Image (cartoon, rainbow, N blue to C red; front, side):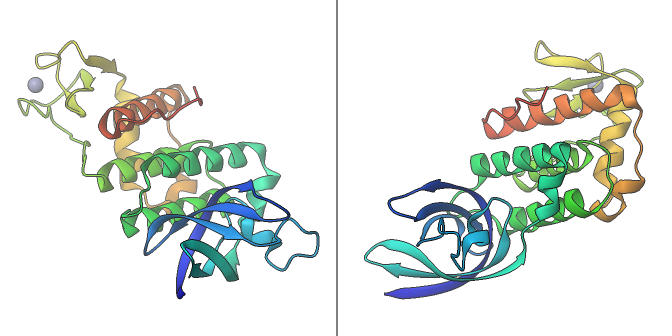
Length: 237
Ligand SMILES: [Zn+2]
């Protein structure tokens, strides 16, 4: 039997026999892990709160005969306020969904830290809808190795007055360099993405993007990550 202690965020859970749960954990040191929690569906269970999605804490996990069993949790924050606001809750769920798609056992700890920052901001700051999610998509795409925010055309270096986004390249290009996989991007959305990229999570609540660009920004960021990481992100639109 071996034991480990790690900071982790709960991504989800499913019922097991009796009052047990199989919990999907995103850990700082070990990436994603499936762990079981004994008796946690009981009303009086000590670890009742620790099985819920968004719960962040320090988990002690014992490996017994190949099974990872949680024996202790010190909850740091369960982001309970997310459940009080349907929009924030939905945005938080979308964020955890993405993690389920990109997090592996060898997941970068940078992604973990980014997730935590995003959840804190979403829960405690008064940020406009989807800005936290947008910011998270930008950072995640970069962490995965696909930096894409370019001021000038990524192909020819020209200053862009009209902007396209090229999905095969995952970059902004000018009208001369666009391909069949490019689509036109409004200037407000183009600048908005740059703005989101440069604004730290702590300052996101001060950001106000042109309302007409908000949907477009989310679409570009989601499509780009879908193409780069080969996953299907959004039911959001
Ligand atoms: Zn060009």
